[in-house]
Image (cartoon, rainbow, N blue to C red):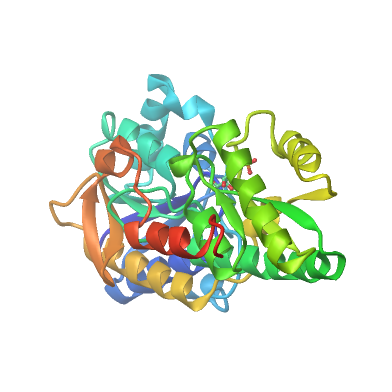
Length: 331
Ligand code: F6P
């Protein structure tokens, strides 16, 4: 029987708990021992862990956040830290370490592999969906729902006042969440890092679209979705510019960390369960330093460095749909 350890690292994402549950249940089935390291890589450095049994993961599938807690651990980049982690894993006789997190967490896992001989498997968990080699990441679909739900609510007020709203969504430096949330909420304009040309071009486009609509329909509500970390000077700067450009009130709304919380939607739960169970099925095989992701509904294995080596592109068809239905004078 093997010994498996799991940790969650970086930004928490809805569905991480469903993944932990799947790992624990799949391990119980095989008679494997499972340890959960606490507080991401910090737990690995401080040998802070708990043994996980089926009772601990009862009723866990629907819970947001992560029962193992999470952290961003800068110290883990050093050789000393990785060596300490390796010694701690060996002290517990761990055969396989499963890291649930985003690209920063995978880089940490790869760094550890230089100092530790055990098997290392990554599982993509981040609301940003910015991981190559997998169609989606655990938490992404829930974050879309949360953002869409919030934008729908903003639309009520926007319509009542025929006002312009600027809504900032998360995604770090990727536009997946922004694009999906903008499409599903039928927002009027979306600003994404992948498609951003310049401040001037964007303002011109918004100005044209808005005046065309106002000519046709009079005052209207207008919702712009803005990906975080995109606009120079931030959302308030853009709101000011739009205010003077359109000669009307513009309200900025930052959705923020609400997008990271809440019960995972079914898609995230099911993906989390599949990936967790698949990771455990690899214990004892030659497979090492891979991320277990999902392609066309099936688990796949991708070398960890591939997951971050280049930016993951937005879906062409989503972008085309956006171009047909938004950001233009006909929408
Ligand atoms: O990676 C998830 C994420 O929520 C990003 O969308 C965001 O940029 C970042 O984490 C925020 O990090 P923190 O919670 O550390 O402020």
